[in-house]
Image 1 (spheres, rainbow, N blue to C red):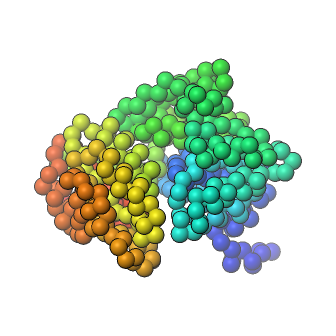
Image 2: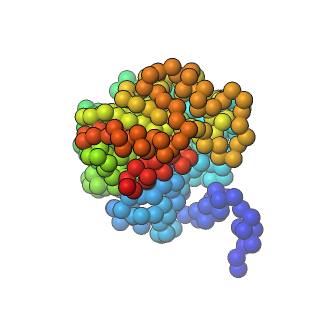
Image 3: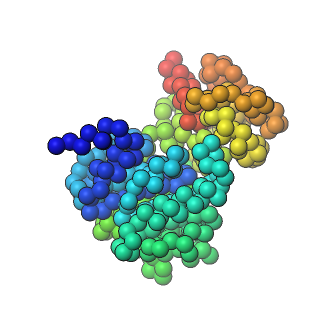
Length: 374
């Protein structure tokens, strides 16, 4: 018989219900990168014939889906902190990639964000059979270690942090990366990763640690990561316009925007054009100083800032894209209330070797679509 209570469950409650009998329950969270990490884990397990069941937050390249219906041995979920629903899971492996000031419309302050991730780790089995995995390079995530009751594994790219798994001798290429993986004093081997950005090196390390815990051999992990197809709206290549490469990315938090812009700058030999759409008045208000600082820092030829995508929120007095651009005060950061105007200007200016990337959690991707449609 079907339990009719499932019809009224929150999505995460339903997933927790479905995964409760799995032998290995993997919940992956963090303020940034959780979609990429959970997708990498799913891809590695799939590529290694582990037949996982998985539900992640983005479409995985060649798989063309964000859901895999596999065996009941391994169940992977992306655990969302935006509404605290990550606390509905009772994982056997819990991973936190980083902790940042995000979703402050839900959380009172950064301390509450941090404490929620600690509660997430405390959902691991009380008998010590679970495993907490975290990015030791991240100050807030690493500060939780002494308060976690379960065994802890750490990963990172900063040698001085002494992680259990270290990414070393990193070489960042235009559209890829290579690095060595060290487990304490033992070099496991080299990894080739065909998605750009140093943040993706950290993401790959996270996925690798989870996979090793699930019994996947390092060589199988290496093979899977080398052909990882990427995730929809995560530095996703969309096509070319006037010989310029057009990408789209979900980046909407200042930390994500900066990391993505650095990867984009490294990706092109020409001019970098960014089209950014802030999402939510509350986020723009709460992270105003951070947005200003990031756009003062970004090395781009032009940054177009569109009107705020409200996501259903009411407008807030004094908080708008036009006022944000004025606060940034940089000649290369331009307010535009019209996607059509941005598309036309890009069509007029883009040349071979240039790169344009749309960023945001709203409908800014339509700029890339329109740019390529004619």
